[in-house]
Length: 169
Image 1 (tube, one colour):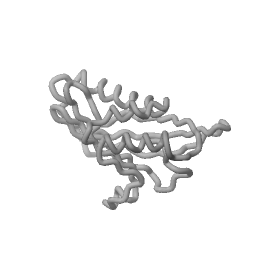
Image 2 (image 1 turned 60 degrees about the vertical axis):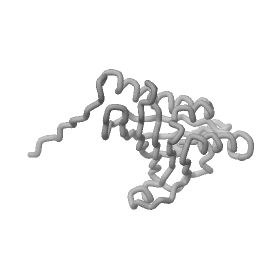
Image 3 (image 1 turned 90 degrees about the vertical axis):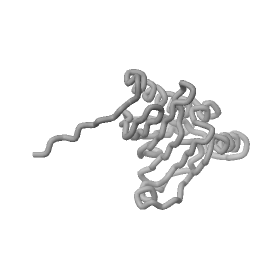
Image 4 (image 1 turned 120 degrees about the horizontal axis):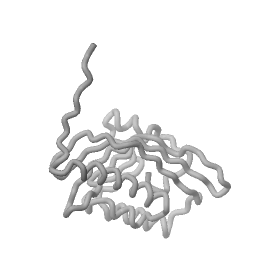
């Protein structure tokens, strides 16, 4: 019988601070999306952040095709502005459920984490359905004492979404 692998991760000088800060950031991420605070949601990212929604098949095969691809925070802001001013989409309410983050790598000011997610969407008629499931592959950086998202790759379990992806996952 093989012994389970021991995780040996250095969380920096203050390990007690880092885990709660990561958890708080994930809670804040979901809360801002679920409460239509989309402009404030972009503030959780670094200026040079990358955000993509990629179907799992494409991700697993190394295909570069993403459903949504933003190369920096300015592109995220533009996407939110277009959503507010130009796009037409079904009015709905989202609820993001994010699993506990697994720390994959860590250094003094950078963490690579993975967390499963589930997004339930409710339409104006009160009908709720699973909209998307998958995993967040996220790189976090501490800059000027603040934990921010440097990269978020949303790996959706399927490329088939029932309606237009209007709001971020």
